[in-house]
Amino acid sequence: MAKRTVTGAWSKLNEQIAACERCSRLRIYCEQVAQEKRAAFRDQDYWGKPVPNFGDPAARLLIVGLAPAAHGANRTGRMFTGDRSGEWLYRALFKAGFANQPTSDNASDGLKLHDCAITAAAHCAPPGNKPLPGELANCREWLDATFALIPAVVYLALGQIAWKSLLRELRRRKWQSGLAPRFAHGAEVSLAGGRWLLASYHPSQQNTFTGVLTEPMFDAIFQQARRRITVA
Image (cartoon, rainbow, N blue to C red; front, side, top):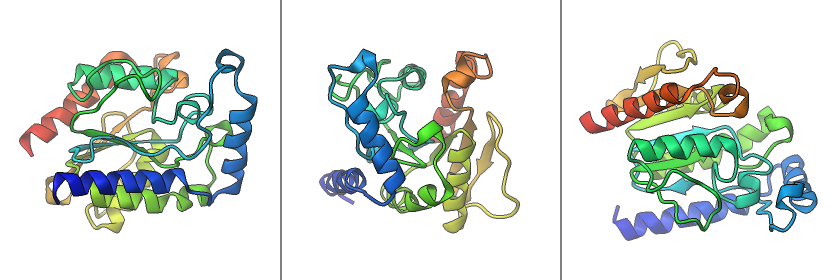
């Protein structure tokens, strides 16, 4: 597919994601958060809509997260932007050569990804960071469309919910068969067609503040992804 065609298809997909109205509970919640705001962001206009994919449509690394943070991506309109999880992710991506800068303050800060794209199991911020099974099911069409467009070699799940969503799609495509592999930080699964599935703990404050996930642990995942991409 020509680069211009891919870029156009990527933009169209992101427009469709941002216009999605399937989950009334999530739409009400995101709009309510956007109206009430957090005191620290009182002077900012919140995005308040489903957050589209972000990154390089020709990426060989596709990262799947859980869902936008209420005062992070739901505020900025860009995946993993404006919260502590994003600070960890983009620092690691920059260090591994997948990003042009290590910070992610807002959607106009000049951040660009190289050979990497980011999507999520759910594109709307859920109450308590816990999307319902039906809400995850409603978002599967977007994950399917992202898979169809991105020529990924490595699929990286950040957390167990992302892992399960990825596995469901991989098995549906018959890229992974047999017993479903268990989630574990650093897990690596060989897939059909020379592809790979990797797993990491999510860089949430719950994991990073407690030391469950450390910077060396997180950096190692992206070194792992880089090695698999290089030999593909």
